[in-house]
Length: 221
Image 1 (tube, helix red, strand yellow):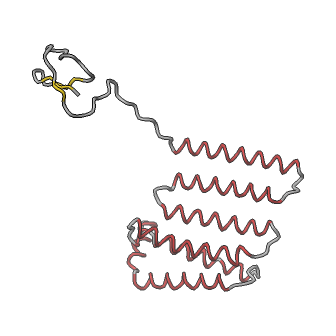
Image 2: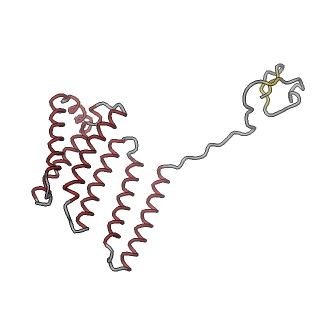
Image 3: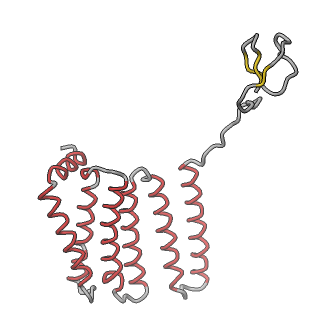
């Protein structure tokens, strides 16, 4: 960059003399400025991403639906694939609109995964692997992921304690499958319920104020 000591102005580009006073210029440190401002590229908005994801979802469902119709429902995996695409679309939309709350995104995705696992199990003749293994392990991983995420983001307990309560409710819902006789091996489900109960009892006894504060924020009590 060049500088005119007489006019006390910076000169862009390379000039033989000052265009104002025709005086001698000095070379100074610094990158020469561009003669025109640089326009920033526009970022892709959430609405655009939503439209793209929705278009791809609908197009995929149409393609697989057409194949399923033409093959007269001969291939069961097509229905499972269509459900998987639906779950992926729901996950993307949830991530776009809940991205400011990572724990909420994780919880929502776990709910979607549980529903998909149970549905796939039923569609493939129901062998019980979903409620015996996948649901308990997913709920246990959810509790661990919630606590780790909260610690990494340095959240206060009252900011995520209600998610742990919601996780407990989902864990207790496994009793439904046990009572219906759909869970042929109950140990994983019972162990997960036990862990959640111990966790919630500890929170109620030692951190009741945080639980009360979180409830007041949610219900405006």
